[in-house]
Image (cartoon, rainbow, N blue to C red; front, side, top):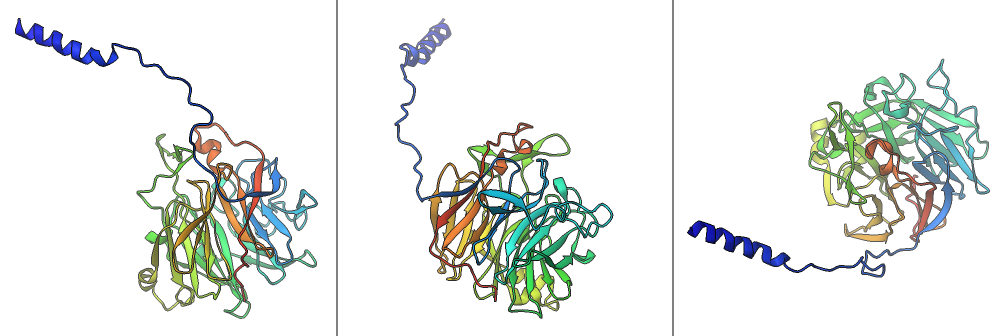
Length: 390
């Protein structure tokens, strides 16, 4: 009998908070909300294929690239001229040569002006992130006066793995007969690495392959627009996107290389002299890498002439700046800055970058392509000059 009374009493207590209906109204449009800051300018709107890379030359010419990831890509490298994007250096070079993978452009991931009158095109030879085609991954330099190819460097077999996806690059003409180029291998399914190539000979070394600084952070779960960024694994389950070393920047004096995995919030650095020294063992090199702490999750990096480093922050729709003393500041935060990709400093004191909604692709949204055109080339005034390459 006592148990029945106790149960009835408990029922009354539990029901008491719900004795009266709680009224509510729709949240007012003018309720306090996330605030944007910083002034973004749109340089170009893209209504066709999705771009990933941009570079601005010392004379102000702008080049972009469109990797062949599934969109209709009539040309993989273009120049913005008079408000339009045209194939560069011409339409013929932007077609794959089925008989010679080292010839035509297959799928360009990055374009970089070298400050010496050339623009370099980085061909992954891996459309759709497939295994790179043998002898297809390459660097092509185009003279900006003649718009003709003046250098072609095919990556040697000793630096290429079946999983290699060459991603971004930085040049230093203070070392080697014709200079040195540093590149990231941002593999999705193999070890990341830094590739060091001598421009004169085309010889290259694979450094820091598979070490923590060039690898996916196993604890990292990216969250963009409030949703975890996941992909379907072979077993049908979804897992966080895992991309190895991606963004790269070279200090103004050429002595330090900065790099970051896309799937990480940490920035790393290492002395370039050690990277170039074949006698410096991988174990020694790994020990020499510095973890500079968290910077946010970035796709692209860039350096200026005054010693600052710039990084996208794709989880927070932001661009951040690392001062020479190591302190970080956020330059712009804007909900329209959807996935800031490659960064490039122009001769006009602006930082240029692509916002391409990469995270809204079908692979990350359970088969639904949620990208909304146009994609944007944006810029932000920073009153800084690009880091010199010589």
